[in-house]
Length: 483
Image (cartoon, rainbow, N blue to C red; front, side):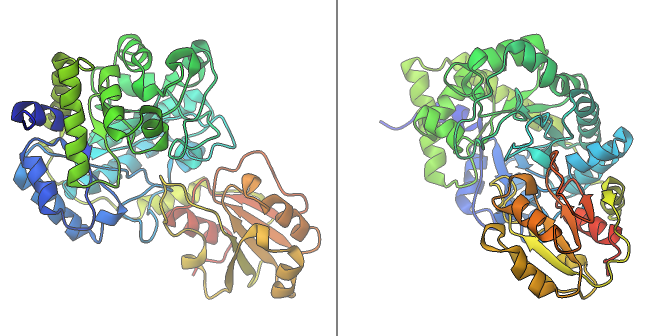
């Protein structure tokens, strides 16, 4: 006997899927017509802006209230500009500038572009308080380490995005900023008391709830005092008691991607993870980036099976699907406004640059970029000073496979500008920089989360608070090297 069509449609109404390539395949469009809540767009779905607009129109032709989501944070996490880097600085740069009105303008500009392309949900802003310098997945995606500052900018970002008719999704509840592991690969643990969470991690979420945020994303992190051995995504204590009852959130709870190891391994697969998330109080389930029709059908079938065996109540699933539909209703009326000014992000990035030391008189230095692996959230997006240099020689090396003497030999009598991301935790990075600076004029450009480390002997230390296209140009300009 096949799956009940009504229950299948109900289950589909809680799912946010994805598809490969720049054109939505027939199955992706067909599932929308059959009740799928929507799709998330990734870099593989973006060839150019006209193509994206065509894709969203095709999905909307299948059902007018389809949700089309994207991770467009600005800064290091961009899908629209994955081939070049974002023209906007990210949250860390905005927090460094510390002008909430400017943060609102930047997010309004991002929202304006998304709305013009037919995208209805931005899986942003990241409102985590980055309290761990070693955090491998948040870092420059955060407005900073101070809860009050992060709260103010988080609310401003939500106001800016939602002024364009695009729903904001504040993430990652109840706070991913104190982790030193990446939930894409494992289940991180935040061993904090509820009192610490309320003081350190909750202020930004309270601020975005007060600002009327339409959706909030869960974190695949373990907080033993609240979640036991499982992630927050599967915890009623987090999603119902804390988020809904204590903070008063009435919008749509969206899960982080259930294919991530922090959820899938904990549950025994994406289908069981979907059931656990719904039972805990999540409404819209992001399946992940690697999705096909068979996976969507398996997850929907698992939800229907859970309705039959008592793991899920129909009332809970109807509530979840209703909140997903409510999110769609709040966004689908948005028309395409005029495109945003293109120079705003570059101007903001210039204001974010911080220079410690002396950067004048560099002449024509050798520019050395240290390789840094990208996280899954970032993807393989170009970064660095290269696109902005006026005919200067640039080389790229792996810190752990390079020695200072080799770089000195390549530079000759030229100074070196060394460009990196998260140099304080890059394998071999700090040692290479300090060995080089001990015997050669070195200027360091830090394009990741700067941390507290500063290299002994360096001529200057330049912090950009991000590695977007805008941040790279701002650094090149600050050094007098831009074309």
